[in-house]
Amino acid sequence: MSREHQIREAIDRFLARTRQATDSHLEALSSELLAVVQGDMRTNRVDVERAAVDVARAVARGGAHARHDLMTRIVDAVRRLDEASSLRGILEALALGASAEAARAAVLLVDGATLRAYKHSGFAPGQTPTDLNVAASPMLTAAVELRQVTTVPSAGDLPDPLLPAFMRVAAGHVGMIIPLIVGREVVAIVYADGEERRAQHPGAPVWTEQVEVLVRHASARLENVTSQRTVEVLTNPS
Image (cartoon, rainbow, N blue to C red; front, side, top):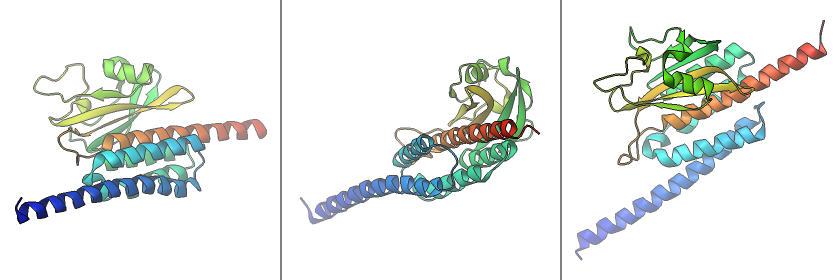
């Protein structure tokens, strides 16, 4: 074996150990940072621990792309959700956090059988979300009625005519519809799309996990604020 080959193998082994150590430290960092934020949180411990696990997994999967500013953005977004004391404030913090992670993001409120556009970011003119019926697309129906996260594939050359214009995903991207659940009822949906992560590109963005963490935390915050207001009304009927 040549000296050059030995040097290259030694460097490869060093880089492999470095990557492994970095992933381990980042996972620990994610839990520690969220634990710090927990001092200001008004959600329960289970939600905090679940969010920490999700973020750690996102970091581990995201590679170099996630390592630069993932933790700062997530902690900032979670803090904004915690500092919001009104329903509107929580929704606006969620929309801001989602827009920082995905290429395009929108929050639509559930009003009976209608989805009402509330906040959006990243959409080109003519593609912005508008009010529409929940039954306008089977994907929207599934997200609202079944309370499940729904994946929206790239529209390709022949987009589904039933798919709203704002949900037509560009090639190489993927979309997600995530229900915002309060008391087992879907009160809003978050639509987001961005670069699709492929197995052969481990450094691709981890925006899907990040947005889902924010939606989950916003759900917990909305439940907390709603229950607090109910208690206030019952204890102060005048």
